[in-house]
Length: 383
Image (cartoon, rainbow, N blue to C red; front, side, top):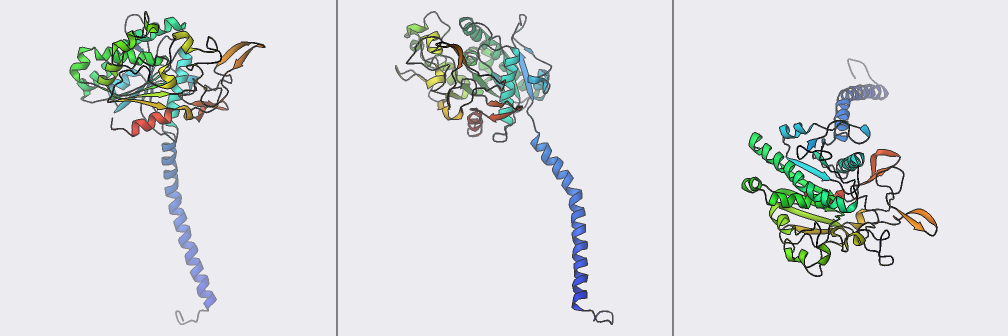
C-alpha cells in the first residue's frame, strides 16, 4: 500500500522500469559528454609523428653541411628547420646515412621510410630523425672516396650539435647513428674524425649507439689493429682503414646487422664475377654486412661494445622496397637478353633494411625490415 492505495505487483514493476530507463538515459548523456574527448585523445595518440630534419653536403663548398628546408619525400609534410633542433635540444636524435648511388629525391625516400618504420605501431619509438644526404650518385670507385670524405662533415654536425646543446642549454643529447650500405663508410670515417678531435675528447662526448645495416665495407675494417688491414693485399692503395679503436673509444654500443643472403653483398659461387657477383667482384673481399666481422684470419675486434646480429629473417621476399612498382635489383641476362629481377626469395633484398612500402598505400609500410631490431637494441640497453 502506497499513499493509502494498493499498488499491484505489475504497477510496481512498471515503476521500477521507468526508474531504470531514466537512470540509463542519464548515464548515456554523461558518456556522450566524455566519449568525444576520449576519442579525440586516442586519435591524437594514433597520429603522433616524428620530427624530420635533413642536412646535406651536396654541392656545398663553403661549409661542411647545410640544413635542408621545404618538402620531405612525396611532399607529404615539411622538413623542420635544423635551427629548431639546436634550440630544443631533445633527449635523443637518430641520424640516418643512406647508401650508394642515390640522388636527393631517393635519399629523402630512405629517410621517410625510417621515419615510418619508427612510427610503426609495433615500434612506436618517437625520436627526431635527421637525414644526412651526401653525393653518393657517382660511380663506385669514386663513391668510396666521397663517402670517406663525408665522414668529417658528419662528425662536424654531430660535435656541433652536442657541444651547442651542452654549452648553451646545459643539455646532454644522445646521438644514434644508422648507416646503410656505403653509408657505413661515412659513419666509420666520422668516428675516426671524432676520435682525433681535441674538442670532442676534452668534452668527453660519446656516440650513444651505431647501427650499420647491410654495410658495404670490408669485414676486417672494424679491427683495432692496423696490421689486419695492411696484411690484406686487396686493401693496398684503397680508402680502407682500421676503425676498431674509434669504435671502442667513441661509441657506447656498436651493432653490425648483417645478412648472408644479401644479393648485392654476397658472393656467387656459380658466377663469381660482375654483374652476377657485386661487392666481392668490386672489392676482392667480403662485406661486413654480408656475414659479419672477419673470423679468418682472426682480427682484433673491439671487446666492450661491438655486436654482430644476423637479420636475414627480418627481410621478407619483396622485390619493391620503395614501392615504386619496379624490382629494386635488376640484372641483364644474355640468354635470353632481358632484364631479370634477382630478388627471388626471403633475405635477397639489399634495399629493404629500412622497411618495405605498401605500393597501394605509399605512405604506409608492409614490413619494417630490420628497424625493429634497431628499436629493440635501443630499448634493451642502458645507453
